[in-house]
Structures are given as structure tokens and as C-alpha cells.
Length: 221
Image 1 (cartoon, one colour):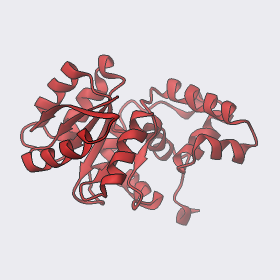
Image 2: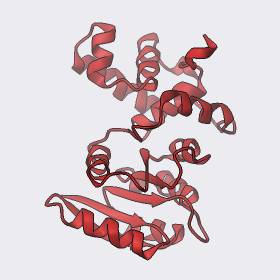
Image 3: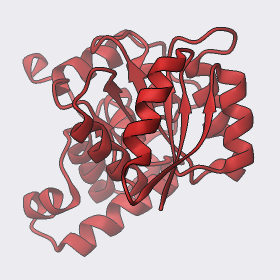
Image 4: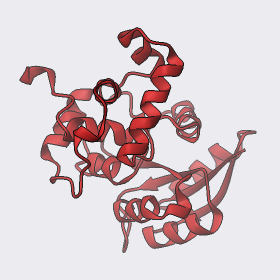
């Protein structure tokens, strides 16, 4: 059973998501929050698998709430999906950097939302299909410099290759094919890189790949 916490200041939005999610046999809504402070409190109380987090909420916003949840070692298993009204939301990249596993636009199709919740619960990163790598790169270019970023030399040459490919959006199987290694070997390299970088999941590998210059937008050469 995938346990989900809803965080949105609009009651109607929460009601719609709750009805959709609770209709699924493998999903259960375990709480609702109308602001970031309540979301943080309920996350600690209910320990959900996934939080659907709106960015713009009164008081403590979704970005700050994401940082607090991601920084709490007791909540390391809690995955966060950012909900945004606009695909080009200026805070999306910052949310990924802060610990979110991905994001979806609020008007996404129900089947896409359910797929996203299941994917993130399984440990995959989630980037809205309509948002291309080019846009992610633009977010990275505009974002504030990272604080306390880990240097690339803590990774082996192969791990740097793997992080760069993850940054391009490749799955473990695709990384294995590109490097001509087994999927198990690719998964091991990804896991070791995540541990060294302190990454919660693959979304943070994508962020790191851009910040460290391991991935460059194609038009820059």
C-alpha cells in the first residue's frame, strides 16, 4: 500500500486528489495539509511514502516544507512530488535541489498522476513529460549557487560517467547499454554515487550533474 500525504491550500484540489487516489486499491491518503507547516508536522506524524506538495501555500510554502522534510533523517523514506500550476515555474529546479523527487503540473491527466505516485514510491525520479532537458538546464543556469556541494573528485571516473548519463535522463538499463555493462553493474554505480553525494534519489543526481558541469546543454557544445 502506497501511503500519500496531500499538501495544498485549496480544499477542492485536495478533495479531487483524495477521491482519485483512494479509488486505487494500492494507494491510501493518510493526511491532508493546507500549508507547509502542517505538511511538515503530518509528514513526521504519518511517515507517508509520497507527499504531493503544492509550492504556493500561505505561511511556510511548499519549497520550505520540502527542505525541512528532506533534511530530517527520520523522514529519509518520504518522497516528495511538487505540484505546480505552471510548467516553467521558477521554483521547480530549486525544489528538486531541495529534495523533491520530481514534479507534475496540477492539470495532468489522472492516469499520469497515478503513474507518477507509483514511480516515485518505487524510487524513480519524476519529471513532467512535457518538460525537456533543455528547460531543466535553464533552471540550473538560473539557480543560486549550491551550498556545500560535493566535489566531483569524490566520484570515480565510472561513477562520474554514470551520474552524467543519469543527468541526461537515462534509466539504469539505458546506462548499462551505453556503457556496455550489465544493468546490475549500472545500478551499483548509481547507488554508490548517490551514497557519496548524499542524494535522496535520482532527481538529486540530475541536479548534481548540471551543477557540477557533468552535463552541458547541447547548444553550448
